[in-house]
Length: 317
Image (cartoon, rainbow, N blue to C red):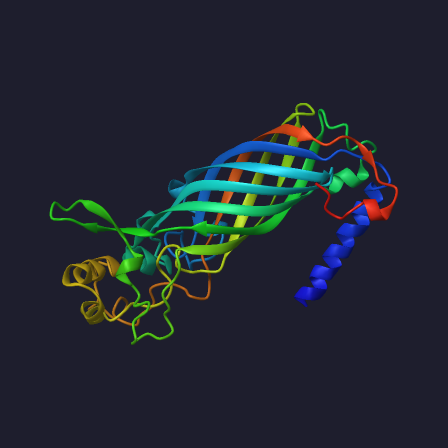
């Protein structure tokens, strides 16, 4: 099925591109910067009722700012290939939940939190469908164009959580080395150690306005589908706390016990004891950005006419 879909996509792009080969094309390159909020969607935090995977459980006060830079090459006015580097921060905290007597009370009493920096690189295709309806796509000044994006990315994260020090102050500690859910323990063969570098699939939409041929601004929302449920270090069930001392040093074992279960009810209660639900492994974590971009054209090829298909490659830069 994947190969068939890929074949159809290539054929579709080839047909559209070949139609532009009959006209004058000008390859352009655009560079710019982006800034805007980055939002985490995972197991921690949320609102009343059962936890979900998207906006319903968005806590405004966990929003952080992300920044980035990008370079986009446009082989045709309707198609661009973007390479971007982004940096941001995300966080989640059960203390932001307002208890209303429903399912959210369990998460509120769970009392877990996390934060992480995100370093991300992406390669995406931009599609401008309205260009196919324009009489003169090269005349961009004052034009407004909606677009969609889809691509592949890689990101690095490192979840941290808080524990209380001897002065009753919150101290941030790295969570992965503590194996808070028994990842890698022989007693939990299904809980594998997770990697701090993962792939994602960025997808979204935006709208671009051209002040001139060389300067434009955009606003876009890009969601990242990920393949891990451990961005917040919470995924499945509580571990048997006695196992930490079998795999960790005494000091790390004490830290792991303290940070893995911060409910006031502790491991001795049915709801928060070993093997009880800590997270939801059926839903991977995700995050999204709402970015404002400013772009500058930094170069363009000379206008060319490609009448012969042998001189009109699918992706000519």
